[in-house]
Image (cartoon, rainbow, N blue to C red; front, side):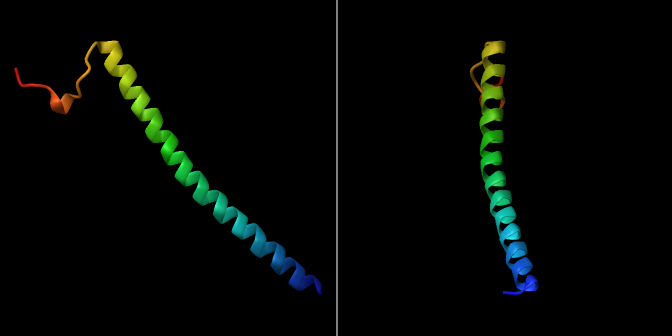
Length: 60
């Protein structure tokens, strides 16, 4: 095994690990953001005493 092949293997492994981490971060991060926004909306509703969403309110 020569040095060039060794570094090619290391490079490919590092790029593969980076891609896996990027995909996992995107998927789980998006899920966390959705959860955070849902909880924020629930807190906002409970703080205002309103338990209906604005698009479901009856017209006055």
